[in-house]
Length: 213
Ligand code: B12
Image 1 (tube, protein in one colour):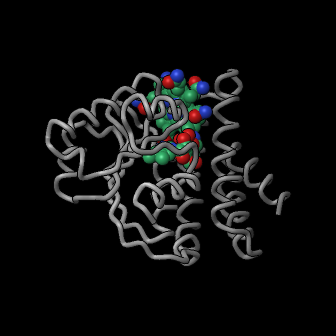
Image 2: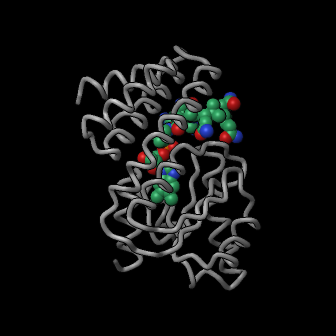
């Protein structure tokens, strides 16, 4: 399995579409847990790609191509993820990437994993303005609001959303969970969020814990 995961990471980094899709399917056939394929295959490849991008070894179009392929591989995993769910929770979650931020792969992974334990996920997408997020909370009445931010310039939006929820009288009705590569436990505590997780599997644990499950 380790070898196949390494091939998946290489294929994604090199945006080799057919190879990436074939190896994802093969990993599933061989019984690899879909959570492992997501985390140790797809997510790990994007993190490595980010490091290469920082070092100037790859350029933006390559990152865009890999991100698109990430989504196609994720589509293959979603049915397997859903059928592997053991417990059904029934709670609702609203998910968004904050305004100014177009990064949504991590948010989508968190959504896919929350569905595996039966959360009903209302994903309102990326680049979501504060007002749109607050309106969605008012409409959907979720138990959890999950906010993703990948840029140091957009992370402060998470605080703005929490403040706006309070102004709208909705803060006590929802648990706010924050995440994204630059987000830390300390930041989450500073802005009064109810939960933080560094990755999608741990986001599931935190979601279950903060809703008392
Ligand atoms: C892919 C990528 C892109 C893609 C995004 C495609 C897409 N559909 O998402 C594209 C090419 C569009 C892009 C654009 C840009 N990007 Co970019 N991008 C990345 C890259 C390489 C990977 C991000 C990723 O998908 N990781 C994989 C996922 C699975 O991991 P993740 O997002 O961290 O999510 C995990 C956890 O954080 C957590 N999580 C995430 N969300 C949530 C939410 C909750 C509630 C919880 C609990 C947990 C959680 O769980 C996830 C799963 O395990 C990163 C590098 C990096 N190290 O992060 C740069 C990076 C984030 N980008 C960066 C930059 C600078 C940009 C651009 C400004 C580049 C430009 N010059 O145009 C633009 C900004 C566009 C915008 N306005 O948003 C910088 C940010 C630097 C900074 N200090 O802010 C980084 C760090 C690259 C770098 N080293 O310079 N980018």
